[in-house]
Length: 483
Ligand code: SAH
Image (cartoon, rainbow, N blue to C red; front, side, top):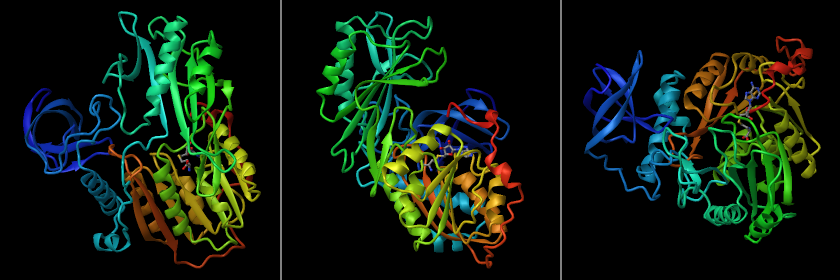
């Protein structure tokens, strides 16, 4: 087999990245655009040792679940990979992937998995859910300002029309910024020369709170400099748009692909927006990490809380806590919460959020989960690691506490399954699994799992196998400054 070879295949599965998987001569191929149930013709694009990539040449017999994608730019913008698969089929495919990983990688018996698996939580209306969008701003070769998305495999910006998983208001905001740029002769950034002023537009939406009622929109202009000429003209146009509560300028004079710079200054209104999860309010700044699908995030956290089954007197560890969303949503139902997270700014946000909500029983430490863990014995551990899953040292420390319940929130079924196997080897039983569709129209799926320890637990002795000092000491080089 070699590059450009053409073959026919049935598509059986979908990868995390949303590519269909088929096979040729015993080798698995990932084929973007192909869907489970399709019979297709594909052309080899890349061969690796044990698998390959191919392009979809033609659909010979379409999957019965194939539909016309609703979004006019689906398939071109790279944001949604499977919008042409029916909503029900998307959920089925994701549920199947979670189940498959837990059986094959986790080594759990299929009948047993069936008995603890709950149905996937999908969205009723999986459109208009994203609370964040980033648009590059560039001039085309005729000098016309383009605000949209990058064409596939290039940095050419294509106007994007109305993205159906984003917010309609983005259009109004972009229209005002474009008018302002033309009127005031404000230039777009040029990656080749490093010149030009406006690089990106970041728009974020919050759902407000009792103290900040109504929608909260943040417009952040990322500029290759320190200020904007005629900023007041732009502020007055943008602030007239319903819901706009914050207009900020972020300085980024770097010559790389990182979108946001370190400094953010307020041009108009607040330098933050407010969202809420249940009865907890969150302040979100331009650089803060926050889940992009708030509706599904609430459902995910509700499930995590259900699995946590808190009675009010528990010590909870929230490991990989980000800005503390999970821990804070549990704090009022527990004795105390201890969060650990590697990004210092996220911990600052977590602390601000705790005090803003009058929560005084949540404590947060900056550090790597494999180095820094709280020194109070837990009654419940929640982990929500990045895609690569938990570090083994972190899992081993958790197991050593003999904590009775572990709630594992995961964005990657494969590493989740690997880690569940580890926990199972150390006496934890798989009690419940719920997949949640947070990233509709992409291949990704979120999962929440409850593991329970059957062994008796002694609270008096907790041997984490490390010197306590070590948990709180994080070398500067290990701090992930740019995450
Ligand atoms: N629980 C949060 C964040 C989950 S994302 C939420 O739901 O919003 C995973 C988090 O783990 C990120 O915030 C990332 O910065 C953090 N992280 C990555 N590697 C880490 C490590 N080694 N130790 C601690 N935190 C880490």
